[in-house]
Image 1 (cartoon, rainbow, N blue to C red):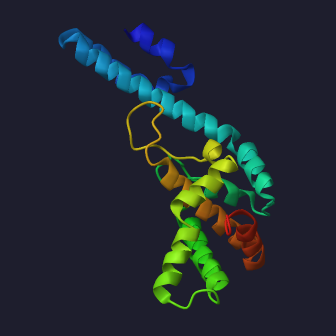
Image 2 (cartoon, rainbow, N blue to C red):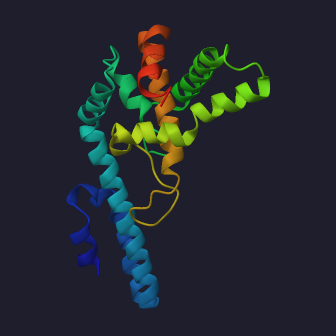
Image 3 (cartoon, one colour):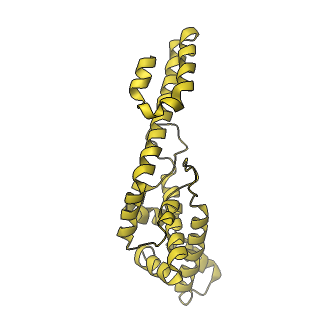
Length: 203
């Protein structure tokens, strides 16, 4: 079983998985085979997750840059691009997450769309509802996916099932807000307004 485990896990994860492999060997000697198999599956899942994160980190700069190019944006601070697509659920190491950029982007989105609708809607209740609909999570996720943000977004699904994408649309919407925040932070309000008008509202 140990041989099968390391056949599935590449060499660069040996150090990380060694303690778990030793545990599996001990469990196999005195517990039912079902339990040993369960432990083996979990270790292999963690190995795949680790390798996925490592691979994404290695080539993310070029891929994220390509996404921003599709948006027609060239940030002067390239680190903001990586930060904007890094959710807090991802094992991001020293790279900041996109929480603050998302908050900045959402705030500016609401203000800009509210200004655009101001002369068209007299009721506060209707105005609030109209703004919320125009920049809903579903619409933001749709924009993000159409530009390939889902292919570069760094996050981890809360589900333990391999390949699961539970909550992806919600994270995509937040990432889209973070991209708006990155544009605003790097290029200023004028560029952010142009970005929103071109890609988000009206959409």
